[in-house]
Image (tube, rainbow, N blue to C red; front, side, top):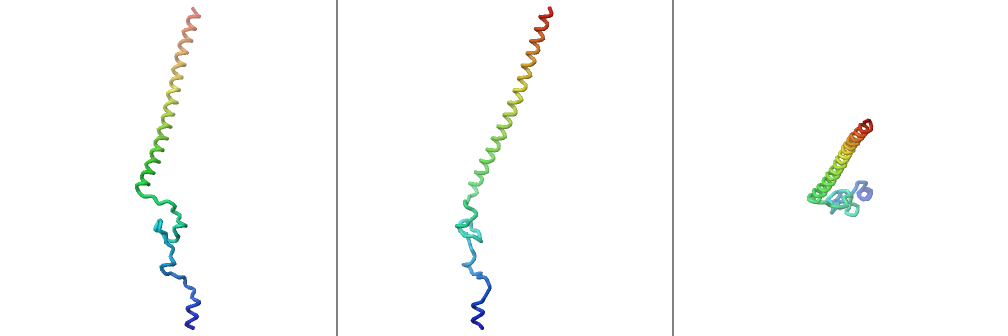
Length: 98
């Protein structure tokens, strides 16, 4: 009777060796070879990466604003050219009438 209870125990082994522990990320439930955190990153590295990303976004925004400004300048230049052309044509019309 005592022997059967030892052999047929259905309890999971909860000893210290049964818990999976990752030495890479210090997480539980997986081993280093199965670690979902493939790369460990330090806080300074993360901050540098975030700063680079922000700089790229700012550059893209500045480029977009520059293109918009250039487009507005080109429209204004076309309007000015049209005004000059209208003045010239209206003067030519006045010369022909004389």
